[in-house]
Length: 446
Image 1 (cartoon, rainbow, N blue to C red):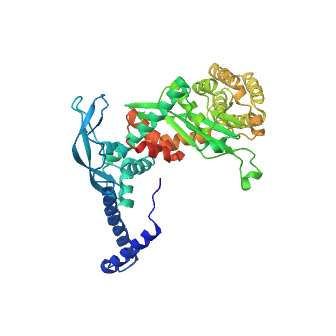
Image 2 (tube, rainbow, N blue to C red):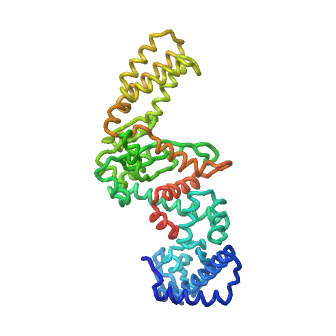
């Protein structure tokens, strides 16, 4: 529920501020006036925050003489314990009821639980803002930006701890949804983006990037899901294929089987089963197509055109030599054939090439590539895909690999634990995908 200051209260506040400013402000120019206003605002916000917290009640969290304990016994009321809470306006103290169980020795403060607080001092609201900031920036930069724009000075370790707590909670909620879906057939809540996907063509792009976790470089599996949007503006006259609509992201370090289940949950929440058509784009990695066959058997599978083109250029280097003008011309012609005629025209060119005098190494290379294109024959029918207005490049997920993973985990000298990296990835996907409501929910007691 959103609470707002009433119109009459705003008028009273403005009158008080004007009277106070007439008596105290000494600004001589615009810059001084602005700095004065910001300082007054920060001081007023801190005071208002303190008063509002005090107004929560003098007996915060009192639930009677005793209440149930998790051990099955009852914890008795001991008294009121004070703690400090740090919100965006500042830090305030609050006294709340404390209960202790003599059977198991556990203590509890119901008010903390009600307010979504943990052992840390950050409020859920501030923790949400911290996670949003740290999902975009490295921790030290986030601390500097936070202090510069809000005047709030937090230790880098506090930002790191808060962000990783929120990320771990996000991933935990996601993992529990996976378990409920596959063990008990409990459908997950729909993502708001689903409304834009129903009855339309949707795209699921899958790839992998590298990040340094637990002392070595490991694969981070990445997915991007978005509805296809018809091109608009001047380019609509010459480009007849889809553009990427609003995009959601998934990124995690785990084995293919576990990622496949998480990927299906991700796509299901976004409307893969309710889209008019689902297109799955990927490179030549076998694990992608195994997951596609298991979880998305009805999807149109497309091998990224640029990845396929790389194989064409690989053949050209093997047959004609590195940097050969003849090889360059051959590769360009074959890439055009691949896009305009599909695999048939390319295989004809490859058969002609095999008839020439080639080294055994080059011949073996070509044989392997012929098998590659035959294996992916159904995924490289680019003329048909183009005629249907489909995208044939996995640019959105390659961009996701750079922005989601590279842009946050691969800064100079960065080394991560696996759990820390996974938590930050969960937060970054939520921030870049615009799923702020879930992030805020996981900031409570996260």
